[in-house]
Structure formats: C-alpha cells, structure tokens
Length: 276
Ligand SMILES: [Fe+2]
Image (cartoon, rainbow, N blue to C red):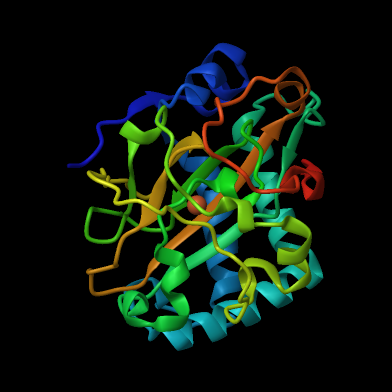
C-alpha cells in the first residue's frame, strides 16, 4: 500500500524537534522549490548526457549497460569533484536559506546518483541491490538522515519499499559480518564484484509500503528504516539522487534512532565532509 507521507519544508530539518520525529520513524515528503530544482537537475542531466543518450530519462537500458555507463559517470564526476560540487551546493540551498549562516554543522556523504534497470532484478550480480536492509547495518550512523530525490515521477511500479512496522522491532540479520574497513578496501558499493558482506535480513519480512513521488519532490527518512528496492516493472530505468547527512550536534549528543539490531563495525560518518 502506498505511504501517505507527512509534508515539511526543507529548512525544517534544522529543527531538532523535527529530526527527533525522523529518529522516531516518521518519513517526510518534501517539495523542493522549483528554482532550486532548476539549479540541480539541468546541470546533473547535462553531466549524465556525457555518458548516456540525451533522452536517457525516457529509455530503458540493460542492467549491464546501466552499470557500465554509470560507473564511468561516477568515476569521472568524483575525480573532478563535480558531483560533490553540484550536490553540496544543492544541499546548502535547500537546508540553509540564508547562505550567510554556517553549514559546518552538517556533514554530508558524496551525493549518489543511481539508476535501476527494469532488468536488474534478473541480474545475478545486482541481486544485493534488492536485499532488505537498514543503512545502519552498513556502518551508517543512527543519526543519519537520508534524502532521496527522483529525477522523474515515481510510482509503485518503480519506487522502493519501506517496512515502517519494523522501525521499533528487532530483525534477525547478518550485519555482524559487515566491517567497514574491509568493505571499502574491496571497492565498496561501486564494485559489483565485491564479495564482502552486504547485510540483509535473516527472517521473512512481511508487508512493505511503496510510494509516489513527483519530480521536484523528495523523501526524507532515518537510516534506521528497514527498506528495499523493489523490482522496477516500469518500461524505463529509474533515476534518483541520494544524499546522506548527519547533524554534528546529533552525533555528539546522541540524538539518533534507537538501534535494535545493528552489529556492523566502523563509522561511515567519518568519511563525510562538511558542506562545501
Ligand atoms: Fe539503503
């Protein structure tokens, strides 16, 4: 059943009380100001068009082609720092309206651009993308907030799925196998041949809520939420951008989701940087 999200504005995330609600499991739906969308999407699409055909948002690609082209895109963008510049400037605009205000209290991961082929769920090498998981099982902080932004309208045929009923319920899982240092050493998320543990559940998970999200909207949720990518049964690839942020004061003061079942080791937040 599709989720009925609560709506907030971006800058509200600067309110501790609101972040507390996120750490208690609320999932929010945010309308990005059209001008801010215009400052992100054309630039991002222009860079993606260097690797994909111009009309890539209307096309489907095989799982292998998606992986190959996206890897080249990431490699180039990360080496030039382009993605970080585009992404962090976007985050800064949406989180802090007044740019004279400091943003050095917000730590952010490198922005991630993702594309899911309609064939991915049939690809043996991509199966780990479909594991139900909490991001905290990958050594992400329980103070982490995820911002997920699609580059086109999303519906249950190509969204992912939350399991809100497990937010306050322990789930059997193999996160104890996840050691951040070893994971990074072997290529991290970008290495499809990475044989290190991708934590997942070890019990049958019931339910699951998908969602609708329009262009220029975003979904905001705690890294502790159990979720999974569902097979993309639409006719085109799904395109999205994802940001992971941690407010330093939350990390220092233990404002975070209550961890029930995370046994991973390491702290991904140490690789985050202040918004540039
Ligand atoms: Fe995730």
